[in-house]
Amino acid sequence: MGSTEKMFIGGEWVEGASRLTFIVRNPFNNEELCTVSDGGVEDVRQAVDAAHQAFPLWRAVLPRDRAEYLRKIGDLLLAETDRLAKILTLENGKPLEEARGEIKFSASFFHWFAEECRRSYGDVIPSPVSGKELFTIVEPLGVAALICPWNFPIGMPARKVSAALAAGCTCVIKPAEDTPLSTIELVKIIQKAGIPQGVVNVITCSRDNVQNIGTELCTNPKVSIVSFTGSCEVGRTLYSLCGKSLKRVALELGGNAPFIIFSSANLQSAVNGLMGAKFRNAGQTCVTANRILIQEDVYDEVLKMFTEQVKKLKVGNGIDAEFQQGPLINNKQKERVARIVAESVAKGATVVCGGKQEGNGFEPTILTDLTVDMPCWKEEIFGPVASILKFKDEAEAVNIANNTDRGLAAYFYSSDYQQISRVSRSLEAGMIGENDVAISTTEAPFGGYKSSGIGKEGSKYGLDEYSNRKLICKGGL
Ligand code: SIN
Image (tube, rainbow, N blue to C red; front, top):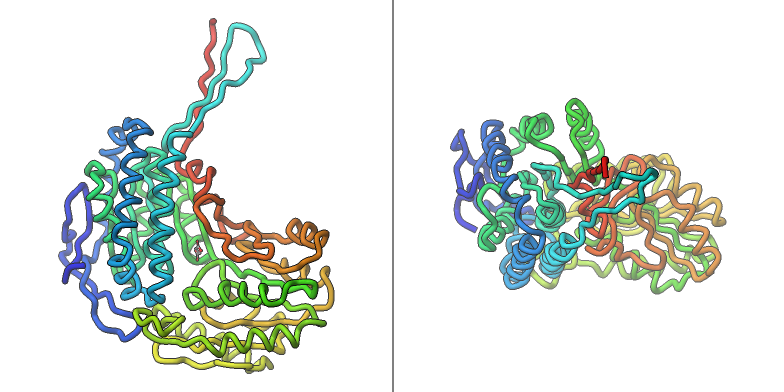
């Protein structure tokens, strides 16, 4: 990480047309980490042009050779895990151990898609008439605009760019304003792996320019797909912008995940799972447990076990191994979490523990005595606040769990074989954790139902987002 970081366009590190910069700060103590080029619409156009120009060359690279580049990027990421994790923690605040996990997670996508790109098979389709043959082949879409969030500042660009490159697309990456440094490091590694110039470009920008840049990426005729991870609100705006030219979209948006503990569950395992699902990255994940439902006959016992564990969490500097929870990313997030807690308490919620800001973070908090119209239940909190509701029976729990327009992840713990099978099929979400919370892995499809998004990332389906399937109908045979 230098004192000023630039953008990467057409294989060169450049300052951008305005030559302006913006400051990236450590969310734990607000210290300046470095300055970064503040890109604008003109820079986006140049980056898209570079990616568009590089596309015929990159799509012609054999899948076997693309795989070599991807494997090398994965290896380089792993070799630099400690250095990259430190940068990630400095700009995002998450504990160093979580940051190390994120680097490994990022590498896993490059290794996975190095394998998958060799398997993007077409079909031979039995013809309905004689003298004719039907085939399909898989082709890359073109230029992919990858708009990435701050909560996984290397993991999300890695998940997107690995799939796009594997499919034969070229890319323009736009990291979040708060966390461009990890993405810049990823792009330096991509450069080091020898990816041809123009194939991967990165545009950084401050909050002032983000709207114009998003609009340009969604309306530029040379962009074929926009892949976005972030809030439902922004997702809807980008989707409608892309609709004008019918661009392909892949949207990984917000969640409001239920976490149900049935009375038959192994309670210790359920509480351990809940700790991870709720407090990873200080609750700042789309798949975090947002609405916790505990069956009435085990409610008191589970609440006691959970509270004991939550009270042990220490909030502080993610760089220091003593702390299991870092700061929240910025003032907007702090204000949001504080408002949700205050408004819920005003409506009658009880604070079992926590409830206040702590430095630039927020105390690990448990709220009980809830009603489903409280903000802590209806809204995606994106913070370390566990909202807990008691339920009577399975039908009630499933009904409450599905009563949301979001459908990203849902978790439940039960030891009743038949219940497990029923509940998994009844929950309206794209990803179900059955007695488990580690749902996000390169081998499995990541994506939501309802307003939580469109498309799947990772897995054997991840290439589809960046590909077209072409029919070749051979006649006159
Ligand atoms: C998120 O997008 O917030 C979750 C990402 C993941 O766990 O893979």
